[in-house]
Length: 376
Ligand code: BGC
Image 1 (cartoon, rainbow, N blue to C red):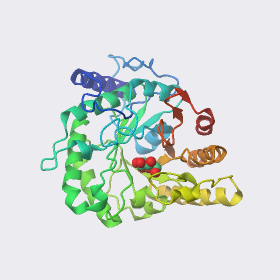
Image 2: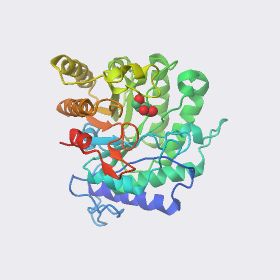
Image 3: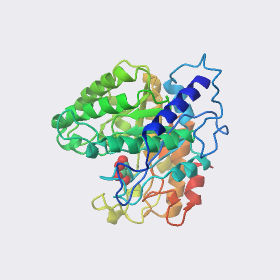
Image 4: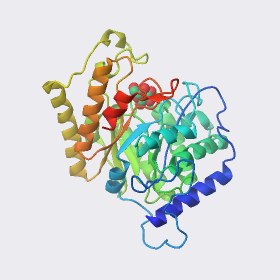
């Protein structure tokens, strides 16, 4: 633990030395984000200090330079997505940009993990070697450093690489080149920075092609990050019932993920990006025996897969859109979070400050009913 804290500190200091300004890579209107190493709850540093309280130059001996997937998932606990920020075409395009204060809020509400969706594909060259814009790396350094310095565990991913769904073969080499660069860039980061290979593989990225692509990505990442925990989910937008089709390489540092938005007509009613969803407005979720039994059956299947493969679970997204009836949103959110916890899944709510938001950015306050549903 001490050694981990020291490594974290060294990483934070190294990054701050090379990350002079905020948002250097994305000074446009709008956007969001998160991340970090987590000591025990209650032992976090003051939110404006990058120094973990346990950092001591004299005690560096024993702790392993890695954290087992099971221990990591236990430590990840409850998290939130900083959605609609860095996965917009440009940070800010979808409403807001991430600030350090967002991590203060997230940490002080009791969350232990932040997942930061990132659209790397919009910030890299189109031709080999597909160089990622250094200014964008600087911005991601800044955001992850803010989160790590506050004791949050940070998940970064490749989000909204849409060509991987429409023309996956043509973009596979570029996808792998992105991971090669990201992995190399963060190879000295503390183990509390986790890589998630891809958000919601879908479309023409079939299970077979995804398995092949993911295996290559893991091999590439392992060259620079031999023991970092990697997060991977199945196709069909990380559906719970697609885990069974994952063909994973032998690797002792994998965490599996799924997203849960069932019943979709409830969670996505009125969602502008879900065609026909206005017709679902008014759909309720009342924790009836039938409704809860369905959730339990799905989660039991995930837990069984997890036990069979000895790979712990991170439910990386779940949430109900703001146009759903509020009492139902609260009931559903609470039930899903508890159902995950009962089975030992870590989770991250979708999301912090936009259309599913638990925080009202304009009013600068939490939506208390939803926050309590997540953190009773
Ligand atoms: C997508 C978001 C979407 C959410 C719920 C996420 O994976 O990135 O754009 O709002 O799922 O549909």
